[in-house]
Length: 203
Image (tube, rainbow, N blue to C red):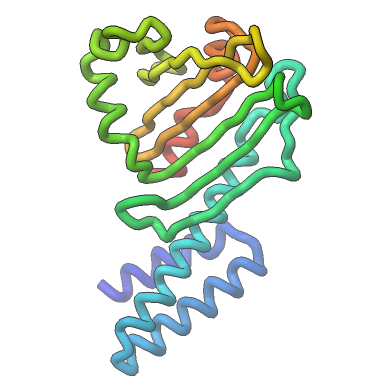
């Protein structure tokens, strides 16, 4: 079993940068050394750090897949965020990208692995008529073949309307918000997000 795990980790190493590989090897060495010495808690801590580092690298790769523009809104790549809580049952990989310089005319994309909202959202989407029951500003739609919950929200600027899409991808939640837009437009923009690739990489 140890040989199999070591082989898998070695393959992962080849996919990333030298600097990352050096840090990864350092954590792997710490995990092995502590395990051999019987320091299981310290060995686990080193392995958890390895998983967090892997999450961050995966997040950076996902950012490369995202559109550089949402129509006239340019990506604020300097503000991109990628963090990891370690891939636990609650919380994990978190990615955020924003579009547009004007907060009243902007878009925001969040990708969260193991979001606590997933179970309730998936339950709601499994019975579509419940989503709109008593709430005319909420309905079930499809984006690139995935069921999603569309919410109409008041935009920051008075008199403007915004929309929010929540799209569950297995164990990952994609939330896409656009200020000052229309329903057909946010769906058009959402279809430019590579959801299938995100689902494959973030799971």
